Length: 306
Image (cartoon, rainbow, N blue to C red):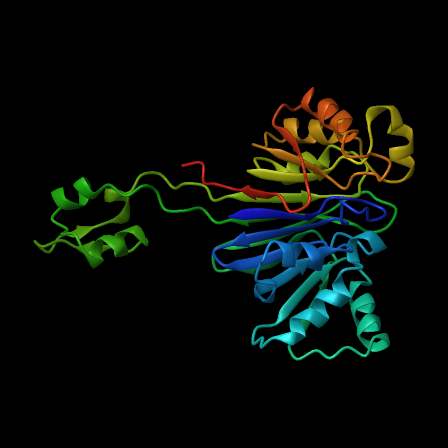
């Protein structure tokens, strides 16, 4: 699993910094979190297969998080697409999508399914993963997201299988998939006889545009990779609160309290040039050392712990 930072800026795009957007790639499937201005540019420069995007998760309907959507939807009509495009977001996201399609007279040759979030919980799922949404505290309805894989089977011990009379071959795969099989002597062999304890899947979390509050940590707990806004430095705490945002050290407190493995700051105020971003990084690392800065078109691998 990999996370691609397509845009790291907030409020307004800069020549070197597009607006907030993160793409998650897992086993060939693509999931987009927010779609700020410039998203298409980064997709093209990274040579990503944008037509494989199956779902877009929108935090809220402020312009710097959704202005890339119309172009992306039109771009997806330039190729054959059989699968629907899911768009999940807060109230009025359906209105925004429909009005954009109407005003721009969009040609869309695939199904778009829009789901507005009415309560926290699972908002999208596949055969072995789920995406949860949880409310944030911004100046309008806003949601954070976690992408969580299901538990995986425990480690397979071939020596146990052989000792129990199960020969190498298809029966081993069936045991690893949780099925009970019969040994060469006709006795039943159960998965628990040849597998170690279940192993956790990977967890990715995305939080932007919110005031700090304790509940965020509970939702992003134990994330392998946590992308979180750190829009301002500590000296601008009052401004951050009034505008419904966080400082970098507040984001780091969440990461520390949630025991995440790594955090990437995102959604920087345009007041910070590339050099000044080190102020945000230092303040965050003083609280949570495993903090990095998001950079446009950076790629971050998200590996299994075991």
